[in-house]
Length: 161
Image 1 (tube, rainbow, N blue to C red):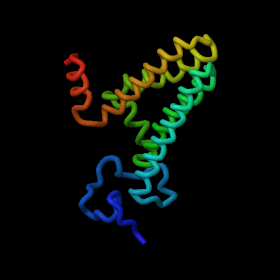
Image 2 (image 1 turned 135 degrees about the vertical axis):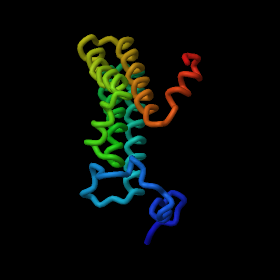
Image 3 (image 1 turned 45 degrees about the vertical axis):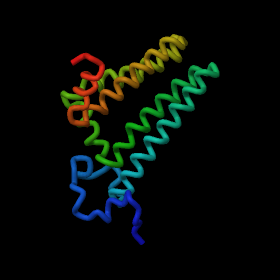
Image 4 (image 1 turned 90 degrees about the horizontal axis):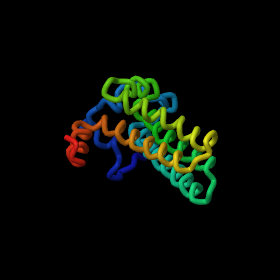
């Protein structure tokens, strides 16, 4: 029996357009997931990613730098993987390296590596935290690129535009 909740995309019928985020095949097409289920998977990955990052941050304050680096980075990556439920991994990779996102993508991926360098090679909490901040800001900047005029609005908000 179909759900009659406010978040039931299937009951909306033709009212919800097939946007770029639901075009083509998702990475999980073989599971036969509906649009609503795919969206739930995406949101679930965001929540799990946030929880892992939060747990990692708590471990940092308990002095466990290595555990922090691993959990925080896995949390961010799980959040990013959630887009596979919506647009698929191949599409995600193509979109990540479009000219509008290439800098944010490279900074994000580089900072992921630098978090591990700071934690396991240098064993420096301050550098690790700096790299995490850079990683987080690059992740936000990357996500803002999907929202029309969001980057311009943020730049204007902080007085840089």
